[in-house]
Every structure is written in C-alpha cells, then in structure tokens.
Length: 135
Image (tube, rainbow, N blue to C red; front, side, top):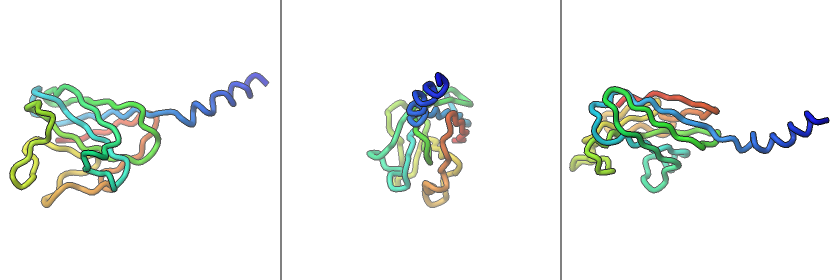
C-alpha cells in the first residue's frame, strides 16, 4: 500500500520532468568572447530572433566550449550557435547577410546558398542529451 502511494505521488512529477541539453562546441578559434546558443522547438520559429525557445551561452574556450541548457521538455528541437568573438552580442554579417563569425547547427552544416532547414538540424530530447556541433 505504501509503495502504491509513493508511485501515485511521484507520477505527476515524472510527467513534468525537464531535461538537460549539453552542447560540445568544437572548432572554437579563440578564447575571446562567448559562444551563444539558440534552441528552437518548431520549424515555424527556426532562425527567428524573436521566436527562440531557449538560449544559453558560455565563455569561449579555444578548441572546445561546452554550453548546458536545462529545463527543456521532451520533444524535437534544433540548435543554432555562433562564436561571438568580439563580444557585441550580435552575429556579425557582411552586406549580403553572410555570417562573418563562425556558425554551427545541430546535425547539419551551412549550405552554399543559406542555412539548413529545421528538420535537417532536429534531434529528440531525452533526460540527458549531449550533442556535438562543429563551427
């Protein structure tokens, strides 16, 4: 009887459990600035500055930088990140809109004529999810 009570009391907590995403960012060229991460939860919001689901950042470390983001529910997500080496909190681009700072995507790379689509970058969250993104 006591075991049943414990199970019923913990079931609601399991339903609302949140996950942790750890991103290993490879190919960071310097320890200047930060690595900025945007997590998107739908294809409609993908790459939109005002529709980011969650953000995170970490001080850049030459070679590999790790960024962790907590409290992400189960679901499908895509990550976009960049190395803000000059620390201006913006992705610097040229006059054509092409990034001048290193950019990375979960499960995909920049295409010749633009960024990949949400589905190309998408992954499923689990209680502890670790992905690797190369700039």
